[in-house]
Length: 330
Image 1 (cartoon, rainbow, N blue to C red):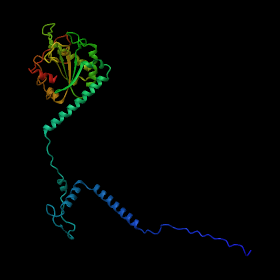
Image 2 (tube, rainbow, N blue to C red):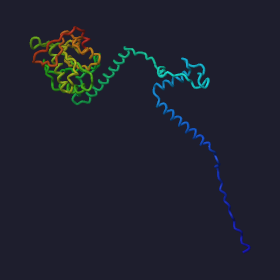
Image 3 (tube, rainbow, N blue to C red):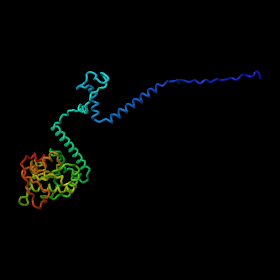
Image 4 (cartoon, rainbow, N blue to C red):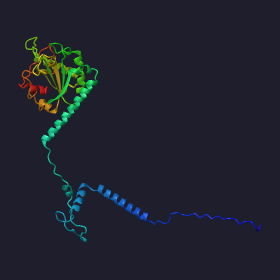
């Protein structure tokens, strides 16, 4: 028993790495942050509570704290000596006066030019949409070669022309062919979506026509334009969107080299721009402006005109004009 070995005792020591007391510096930093935030929100509350006149007075005070006009070059005398609080009265609203900026008046010519450019871009967009509508319409797609679309000084022009074996009207009559009715009704629904008013003009070739005394290509072209108007309205176009219905006979030929070509027999629909509409409507007075710019003898059809076979429309008085001027407007 006395020779028994002594037990081995292993002592484990736990080491603490790092640690130690860091002090309270973070508390000071947090207190400074809280004070700054309180001051910030107090400032926001004061700004929200002041009126425009008070804000202007504050702005004026910091711009000129002295009692004299102009910027101070020395500390203003105050109750507590130089540099102290000023006892001068501050004129309310003066800060607002300092913020006034003199605006240069816009050039009327530049405004007019920009307005014309904007309207032309809008008409170009309308032309693209109409061409896409024609391509996507099963009713219009077979006749797309008879629909000519372009932009003129008067606005967006849509022309429906005759073909050799596909005329729009019966010979010597204002009776529309069934497919022409379909074309015009489709166009009427599309034109209704734009705010502009339209003008409608009828054209013939130069072949002499006259089945009774006093009824010529002038009256025939006016009757055909009016027949197109009625069909557009049947297709959904509002009646008050039609500004002018006029017959131009063969005074404005499409193919001048071949006056008897079928393409000269056509209906022209112009979605008028603002300038053209203003020149036609004037100031709401019947000053004869509708007849201006039309060839001599042009017939302006009334909305109640009867088709061919009824009494011929009375020719309107029209001022003589060059052929190019009539083509630009119609």
